[in-house]
Length: 291
Ligand SMILES: [Zn+2]
Image (tube, rainbow, N blue to C red):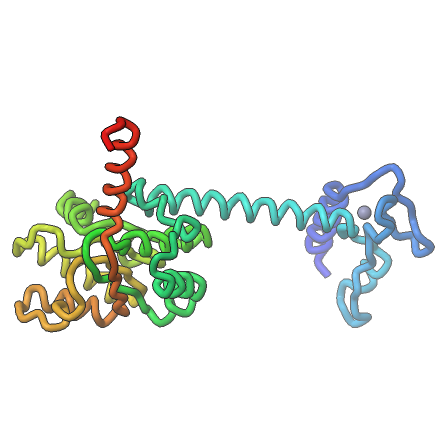
């Protein structure tokens, strides 16, 4: 056997020995192996080599350092701490980059007033089983009047997935169209994000200006997502029925894609916004003594 090979092995063992932990209470056992004075497990072992192994003769009685139990626990705890801090950094980044409107951050399951218990339950189930939904490429389309809480439900799912360290982009069409209209580089960057995030949420589809240019861009956005095979969540004031029966080709090709990818959830009920504004009016009238 080449001496150079032995040198490499000897050096590696020496380095490991130099880096190994030790404490004053360490002692040798009857085999001459070092034992940790704290946890009383081995800090050294003999290499287990078969007699036919070319290294056997030279290394059969050669102790090599290994981490004792308390050292191993320390290493594992450190690994776990690192993993957690990496995860926290990821979550913070996803929240910062993926939630494009500060208001969306407030939409969490803990803030749900449970006015539509079935929808709340469905959204929770969707978020809890996201891996499956992701694999199926299944999204949702929340349809309903203004102010019924569609954005709230979509936001709950988005925030829940971010806290599970999933990448989410929650945005709206006007913002995406502006981004697509910038340089070619910016456009590529947006399209890349659209196809790579685990969940894409497009809020308020249908309120944008329906010029041929914007319809073309909307199709490009939806089609990019469609081709990625990943889930899409849409909120819209459009009615599911109208999306299904749309006759105009420019709209139809957009809606067809959406209905292929997204399961419809009609969100009915009173407008929460008018209810909130009513409450606010009552509060101010009371406060000012106008009642
Ligand atoms: Zn130990």
